[in-house]
Image (tube, rainbow, N blue to C red; front, side, top):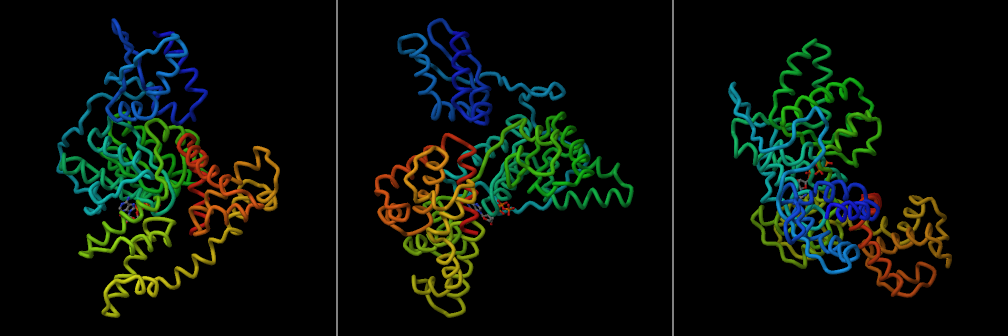
Length: 443
Ligand SMILES: Nc1ncnc2c1ncn2[C@@H]1O[C@H](COP(=O)(O)OP(=O)(O)OP(=O)(O)O)[C@@H](O)[C@H]1O
């Protein structure tokens, strides 16, 4: 069985993107039973995810290996994460009660909760990981690193963790800090020679939530201080949660030793919400203001505002304000009037030509190659990406899109859209590229 698992690991390491392999497959440990083959996951979160996404694949590998169907059972067992040597293994730690009086959670917004956070495909993994960490601070995933574009809910999610931890343990020392403020704290400590106080504060926390860490870029002294604080907290099994606009390895101007540490725990992405999720967010936000929004109106707004949730909220606020000032009810006409400027900008920006140009620039190919008949791999993928973005961002039909790509058939466009959905699910890099292009085109 051990030999099978080794061969299975080899296959999966080749098939899966490294991030997925390291997060989901590597922590599994084979357990030999009399008459069945069991894999032990370190926690329920990993167990459920593996069951849903990878079990069928592992069973297919078992069939190929043993030449007969082999049932694989999944169970819970000891974590097998290989943690850095200086870090104690992550087992059942709870936040230790403090001896000195608790600080109230710094700058936590009480409305940022898991309940008020709408879930969809774009953020379900990040939310599940956040819940896991909130329930097991310091032991589930440390650090938890959440990345994604602006206004997609990173701050909301990490503050929701802070709020849960505070509710479970009001004595926990929790600090939420935006990276820019952390930089200011370092500068202040430097000027007033108060690094001892600075260290005492940051090294004694139970939960550090640090937002938008890309702001540390190029700031050597800040990075050095953060390195010490990070090590001290992780070694003491205190939870660190970080958000960033990009994947750890891609943060420009960040020391390598920090980038590698950011990947020690779990790294999860938040992507721009899909249409139905945007509608759900609008309905929920409206309800929070005491307004029951009609679905067709929510769909209309959600179709126009695609870039991020902050903009979606902004559009909704504008509609509400317009309705109040003009003392009218919320109708489709009123929405169109109130969002007039925004709609004009959107329709100017997201033309199919714009999409083709942007995608061609991104992949460093010529725009004419979007229409050409050549089918080399280096052209096919960008073309499929552009078709899929055109489907999402314009109201053009499949045949119209096919026409705009050198007179291709609508089935080619459909195939492209499906292929991109599939690739986004399998390949983290692809998914990031898509999110990035979406954001560039709609911001
Ligand atoms: N899934 C969601 N459900 C409900 N509200 C959301 C969701 N995602 C984001 N929001 C709301 O959108 C607004 C912007 O979110 P937030 O500030 O968390 O984004 P961010 O990713 O941290 O952005 P930035 O990178 O600019 O800091 C907030 O008001 C937040 O409550």
